[in-house]
Length: 117
Image (cartoon, rainbow, N blue to C red; front, side, top):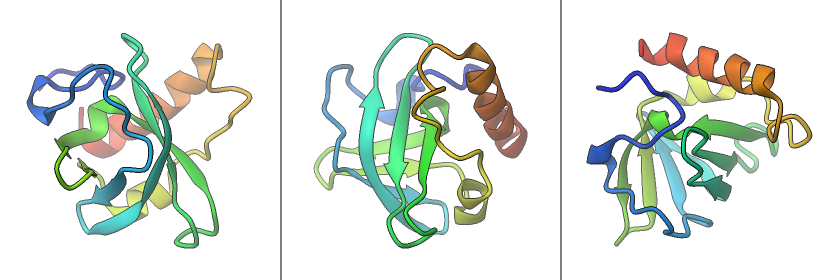
């Protein structure tokens, strides 16, 4: 497996340009929410997931490297994280996530630690 957290693995079934907005996101132990927005940008691919009432409306930034499978037919995205790992992740910061390399390092570091990447 590649150690690049901000890129989709070739085995996920992701096709660049596919609109993933509204897809359900499944952690290894259950559903966590829906994709609010996403990016296919090279070296900066991610999902912003709206967790809804599960963790009180928190939005989380999931690097594309956490995605294991995208099921186009079911409109579901599976990630290699537990619900607790996602709940404990750094909160999505809409002001920092674009153009703040330190923020991406913080988020990427968290997920690399919790995925063993």
